[in-house]
Image 1 (tube, one colour):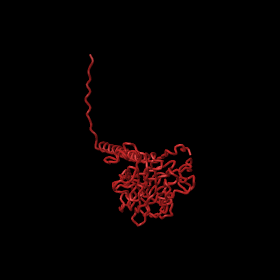
Image 2: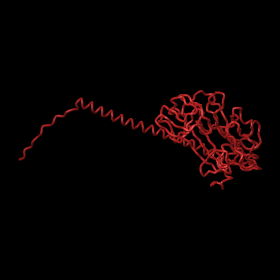
Image 3: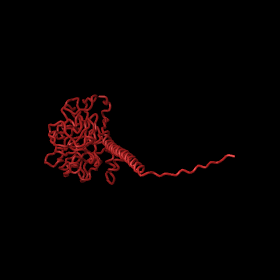
Length: 365
């Protein structure tokens, strides 16, 4: 007969105070690490979401503008005028900031014409024209603001009207009366497309422009131009900026408007939320210096990007510590002095090239 041996139950011992303190400390360290990881992940996600929204917005705007350009009317009724206009952003009495303005005549779909002519008695006759006039222009976000952070931002506007003679208070978009003394379109003639515009650049390839080595604005036959006058009437004001000089090498205009072969668009947007994350100058910068110090170098874009300080564009060449080396006076601006604390504006640049239908056979030039 086997004897059953019963072991006495072991006494259960709880955690000591030292063990509790160590466990709590380890848990706190673990939670802090997890919180830091989540915080970094949310920061990356937020930046990615902002970039995605910027890309989508810029893509939508460029698609709309490219659609207008691709439908240009090449016949005698057509017209295309691209020029640079100037504004006094820092309220010092000198207009130092430039924005582009484009007016054109393009083909329109029946739906577009019906929408624009709703309620007009002469709609049936005007539909036969098949054309509309379109204006694109950038205006200051707040013309009289003293907020340096918002002073650099612009608003992109687009307007359209049925091509034809003026009706009532309506006037052609190419008429001098269409624009106010400050350069704004007539009230109600244009609608806001998007805000936060830092830069809208346009370059036009002529019949002699060579694009194999990229786009370059200049005064040689192989260069591109930054403005356009389809009827060669000297409408862009070349006295205000060299970019308004379309050059002497363009072909002579005959009985049809002269249109560019190809158009290159650059759109750079900066959201209001981006301003909170922008770095600033740490010291005064004169107009000769090729580098400057910033308060947060981690918020400086990579080399090759452009930054806007006051009314001057600069192209970044390198970043070393808190020092940023730049190429001064980029994008047709002039080097200027900048005070300590000036904001470095920049955005994500969207580039789009639009071939003009009448010159599609020249795409490889």
